[in-house]
Image 1: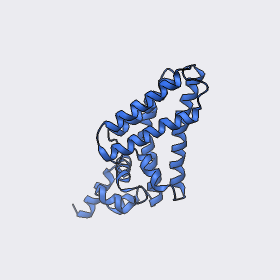
Image 2: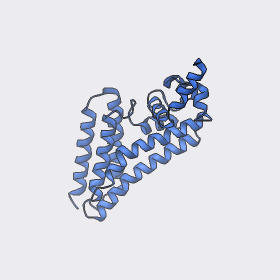
Image 3: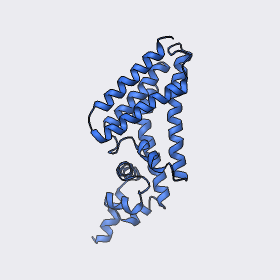
Image 4: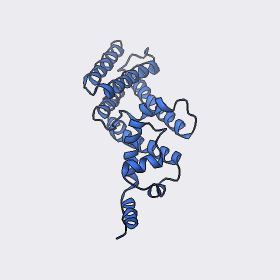
Length: 206
C-alpha cells in the first residue's frame, strides 16, 4: 500500500468528534485564536487536506471546537444539576459540577470557556459572539436557580439574585484560575467553602 493511500485511510478513520475533542484540549493550552487547521493537523497526526475534509476554514474549526466544548460542559456540569429537586440544590449542584469539571482536568488548561473568553474579549467576530453567549447563558442559569430558590422560600427574597449569582461565579472563576496554576485541591476546596458560606448567609432570613 502506498504512503499516500495509508495517509488517506488514517485521516478517514479519525472521527470528527475525536478531532474536535483534541482541538478543545489544544485550545485551552495554546489558545483558541491560534487554533488553525495546520496546527491541529500537526497535533493529531493528520494531513492538512484530511482536516480540510472536516473543516473548510479556521473560523469553522474554531466554532465547531466551541460547540464541542459546550457539549462537554453540558454533560459534566449542566445535565447532572437538572434533576435537582429545588432551586437551592440546583445552584449547589451547578457550582459543585463546575468545580468537579475543573478538578478532573477535563481540559488540560482548565475551563475551556474561562480560557477562551479571556483571550478573545477584544477580537470581534462569530467566535467571540458564541463565547459571550455561553457566558451569559451560564450566569443566567446560576441566577435562575437563585430566583427559584427565592420563590421557594429557601433564599431571602431581599437578596439581589444577580449579585448572588455573580459572587458564586467569581468564586468558581478564581478556583479555576488558581487550580490551573497550582494543580492542588486547595483552590477547589476554598471555592466550595466560600460558596457555601455565602449561601448560608443568603438563607438565614428566608
